[in-house]
Every structure is written in C-alpha cells, then in structure tokens.
Image (cartoon, rainbow, N blue to C red; front, side, top):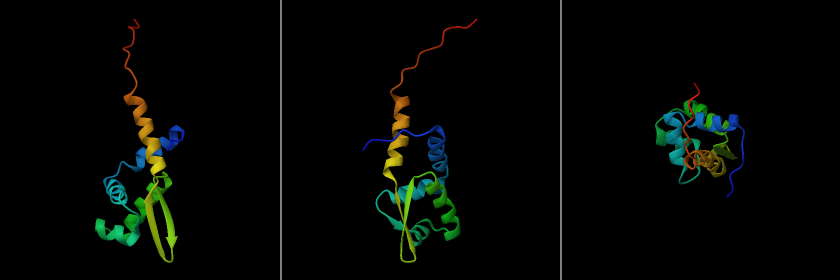
Length: 104
C-alpha cells in the first residue's frame, strides 16, 4: 500500500489528533477490529458525548472511518492515513545530519 503525499496541515492534523491519551486508547482498541460506539464507551468507561468528541477529532484527521448500520455507528482505522504518517516519520529516520558551517 503506497502512502499518499499530503500537505503539512494534513500531517499536523494527524499528529495533533494522536496527542490525546484517550484518542490513543481508541486507536489501540480499533487496531484489532471495527467497533460500535457503545462497545468503545464500555471498553473505555466513558460517556458517549465525551467519546463522540474524540472520535470526531480522529475522523476529522482522517484516522478513522465511520459507517452507520441501523442506529449504530461503527468505527475502524484508516490504515492508509497511518501509513502516510509512518512514511512521513521514516523520511526523518533515513535523513543524514550535517552540521552547519560556522556563520561568523
């Protein structure tokens, strides 16, 4: 799977969305399977309104994909977006540090 080139704002949104401990826990739960909101609420011991706020942040950053089935919303990871963020970080891992020449 090839990661897409994204703007600095899109990269920033992805990392910003991952900067909250509850959102990290949501991502960890979604690694193994798609879950509905009620399952996430139960696993995280949190209210639906609080969870919805954090899911919206993850969705706006394109890190999760939502689908509705009847009255339930199901969420899964957008693996492509995680691959993009991973690719962005690996560019730094492969770069070589070159000290600057003295300027004065």
